[in-house]
Length: 143
Image (cartoon, rainbow, N blue to C red; front, side, top):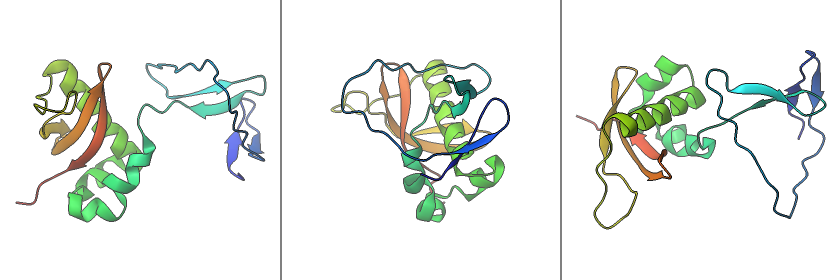
């Protein structure tokens, strides 16, 4: 609460409360080709379509940045969220163009795979669910 949110007319509102609905409702995930932000609702609130699990940021980056060797990746992409998106996009591209090898006794769980993320070789771990790569972790092994 207290976060600022932009409206289509350019004005800014403040989140005053969050309402958790304890029932099942139909939800839609928009697949937007170019822009990941768009306006919704009668108030025209700006929202962001997030294709990655931002909860992975503290594990992959946070205090682990040095241990995971991803400092150059953060610099290249200018921050944790954009770097995470680049990792997820590179993983999905690898899945679609080369496929992954999977752990023999863990359906959908990929073997450590080095992928190109903006010219940087990064080892990915994760799984494939319904044809979508889901990142588990990422690192550049120390030499």
